[in-house]
Image (cartoon, one colour):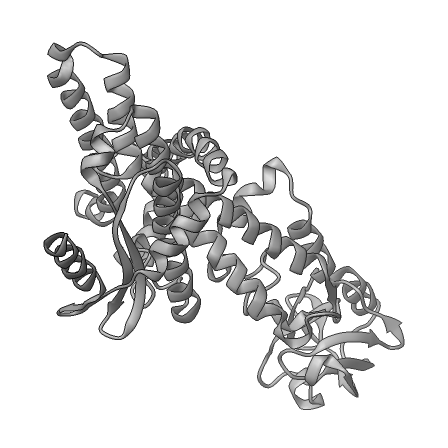
Length: 416
């Protein structure tokens, strides 16, 4: 008894130790094991693992569609390759600081949370199905947290039935999908509470040496009225100016300053450019209300819009850097864009992690589940080589397609 107790204590002490292999710091703790035991004892956990088992094939199908359709787009649309090449290789990696579109702070928070949820779901599912979790803990890049790990007993996993082991593996993807869905709902809830600060015609640029500059008009001004005629669109502005001629003067009122609360009025001497009467400003319709309604109205046709990062769709996403100043939130106040961006990146990273892990690439979760499913179809012992060959063949095929998708934009210029 003393000898066995000594071995158990030694094992527990080993699991609590801190390991450092430059640059990764591993911290093991029993706190997560206790949490897995508690959550795994709930009936709800067993139900979730069944739901996850249904979710994974759906997500895998979506992932395969995205993988192969992306390759076809690159092969048939040169513009897509140009855009991918301009974005750079870093755009293919979900790593903050390397991916030019992934914000550093939101990115790290999203990745740490997504990995912790993925691994934690494996641990909870394993305990709910009677499998042991050998160890768990946190991973750091030097002192920066980068994720978590859960080491489910592989021997027990191999001896378990196909359904049990598949449910454990599916839990990670299922956990990411559930969290992603909750965060997307949160994004839509935040956006649903937005109100436009102002709308109308926005001054993007003031031409040097033309009357508008001399009159004191500035970039970021928003036209309110011209000669006491309210300006809500470029059509309104053009209508007023078309009734004027060279040398006419118009009184222009613009909104400017913090939240465009200030008003500035001036007189502009009109001139002629390209046979049109102009002030010397480059303008465009803001369409603030229209952009907001488009993002709030979720339809089958607009689902893809919620997969586009704000930096890539600054004119569509209300919480992008370009559009944020034009909206306000009565409840969340000035912090609304922070909350909206945090929820978006949690949604974006969780769903991408789920899709990637659901792909039938061995040894990812999807690949292992695919292998188990094949063993269920080909139960004869002499079919083990066939199962292995199919698993490897599918894995290699998908990896080749992924590699081609990454490489094509960068190698095609050499063949043109």
